[in-house]
Length: 139
Image 1 (cartoon, rainbow, N blue to C red):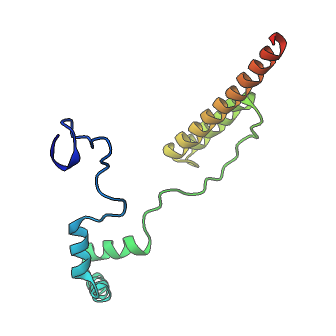
Image 2 (tube, one colour; image 1 turned 90 degrees about the horizontal axis):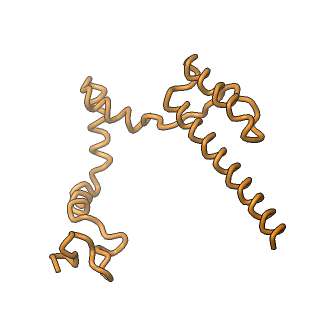
Image 3 (cartoon, rainbow, N blue to C red; image 1 turned 60 degrees about the vertical axis):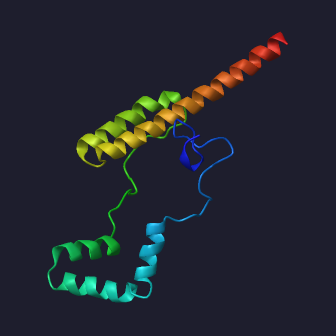
């Protein structure tokens, strides 16, 4: 048995899950202790430096004020999707929106992946109903 309750592969041994849930790293605790009561002063200093023209301080302040967006609401014309037969037209509308700049390639890819999941759900429901009908007829 290796150190820290791990086996020879470095994995936690059965019954030993490592640190308890909520346990914090020593460095994090030490950092918080050093900064305790200083947050307001540090924030004011960063703002003062940004206002004085310090580009790095400006970047830090702007990242806190307006963090980079990870997602946005996507609005574009897409046909109604009622079944698998509607998917080719929906995918074509997504591709047209990407080509025209209304959607980014990543947004188009995400929407296409949603369509693929929708298709899988339709196929699964179809298989389930066909299987139920076969079992009923033979059963």
